[in-house]
Image (cartoon, rainbow, N blue to C red; front, top):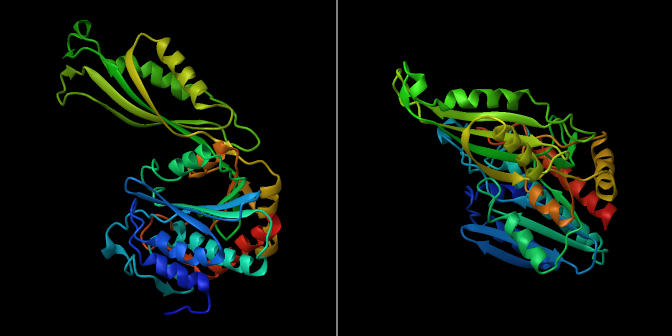
Length: 379
């Protein structure tokens, strides 16, 4: 297959894939989307924060507000020579479309736009409002993207009621998994202080490795929780430990470590931090601990939005989706705290961030139908 002209979502996807929108550069992708939305009656607003470009577009002024959210930025392609085709030149092969961002998540964006075009053509006087929140800062620091847009909307008392994020949620086939939440992510940056000394005279030194060892063992031995009906048990993982001065006969003066919690709604970040400090304070250890919160856990329980998404998948894909909170973090962590019901539904994620990222052409076309049906069921 060298060309696809029968499917407007594929043509749009190809146009987006040609834009080298490596995070946080939007590379003009949002302008392409805006040109499609304005003729439909959308009020489009560009919110620029530093190097990050965000698009907030809305059609209608009534509730409920159904928002489609996503990102135009992609991760770097890596060594282009390892790709079978130019990562920024859409290439068709064996029913698939290859290119950086094909699955994560320009296909989702293309399907959203075409689904909205078809829905508005059929229902020009639909109930409620349709909105899009698109950022170029999802794959990077995620500080000036969806987070800042949501802060802006809250400040001006503009509310989103329901949100569908086009992240690649599917695992083996389109629609087999819908994410209805995500675990929280909390990282700790630890410094343990000691006194450097000769290894033969430990009484004259204070080895921070020895001080930290029992604390680490205790942290690993704790069952933080057993999860709940929607979340797996909280996990604790150490991702880095560094110490030593490079000599075999010297004990170090300092140890640094980094660890991460992926946690369920059993905890919030404050209660989790409090528990960790209690453990450290119970030991004879001189430490400094800094924290970074990537996002609190969020959950959208079965209700209006989840029911509509499940029905759409059932009708369009002929299967019952698994409702999951697995995986890493997403921009849903910035949208949900404003009281928004959030789900993630997108293409198969097997090739995301990899060499030769791709998506099935048929899946992109079917995804358009899914989004259109969700619009019909909710508005």
